[in-house]
Amino acid sequence: MGSKSDWEVMRQADEVLTRFGVEHECRVLSAHRTPKETAEYVSAAEGRGMEVIVAAAGGAAHLAGVCAAHTLLPVLGVPMQSAALKGLDSLLSTVQMPAGIPVGTLAIGAAGARNAALLAIAILANSRPELRERLRQFRAEQTAKVLGETLP
Image 1: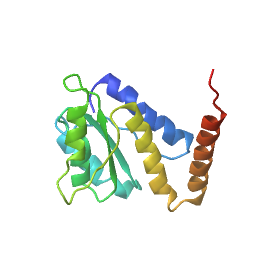
Image 2: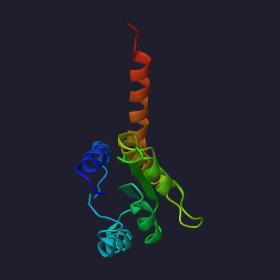
Image 3: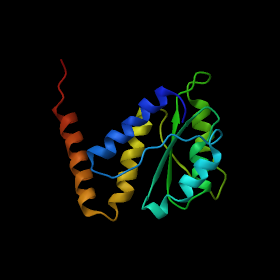
Image 4: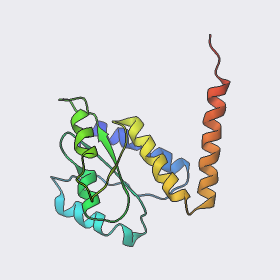
């Protein structure tokens, strides 16, 4: 993850995880500019109690794939919008993982960041009943909001 706008997009994931009370870490790392630090951070993640990793990258940079190569934890990739190809390059580099090293790939940009956090919460909720209940309540609130909408 590189640019300030990428950081702003990924703050969406931070906000969702915080709203649900999920402890998490936020780091800026690069598959290509900080390869050693990235490998060390991800390799030690499970030992620090992490259960899911959300990684974002733009262009052909593939932080999620590098993370997945260094851990058995589920890795969720968020492709970032890019100047050259509007994020299509990011999406393709994230979704086209070779068989055997999976990366769950979300939408490009802010929607992907929010959904990556929600998917991480759903994964964690499988073993945390209180988190499952918060997720159930969140979904009920979304439903009520949509059903409460009226046309002008």
